Length: 231
Image (cartoon, rainbow, N blue to C red; front, side):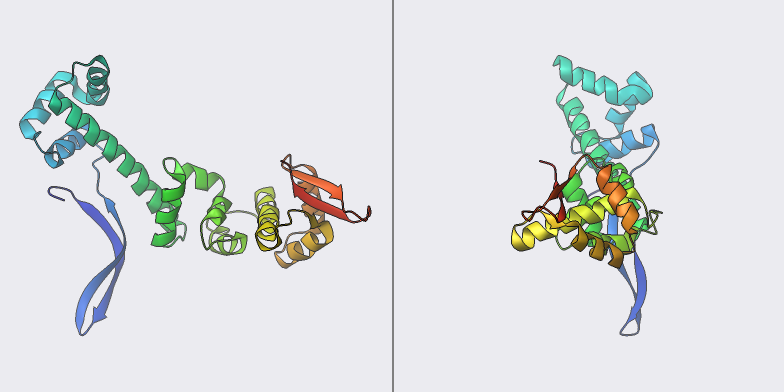
């Protein structure tokens, strides 16, 4: 797009004797300085330009986003004001997306997985995934095991973290529902799989007991303890 600048992330490789750059991710290079952002927004938006940017800055200074929004709300905005307001909103969304994707890439995500995550979780993806990386297991083609293997170390999640244990339990229940339609799993079966994922049995039982969204009940034989999700 005219007047827009981007940052490309990737690697250099030799192909047929020539050095080529293969990028794996791209993000718009947005200015952090308010005045520079105003100039950038006006440069990429048809009908605005440098003179309009100067007028807005001399009138409102760094408070121009709020001033333009106020004009829009009061119905006093010009066509140029409306165009700037739209440009700033789009750039704000782009900035959030670029920040989230860059953070995911820094933690070991592929470009495809990072794009997938933002498409599903939208604004606030960075904070959401930092709080619970196992939400990525909800994405197509992913599971607790794939996400745990890729991100546990980079997000500094302890092997006995309750967050990790809950994510494993929910994955097992969801997987059982998808495979057989059954959302009730014998705890013994759960413990066996937990052992395979290095989750101590005592911590597994403690996590179940202290989780509001998990229920312990007896199977139809009245003796086998089972686990399911609270509805």
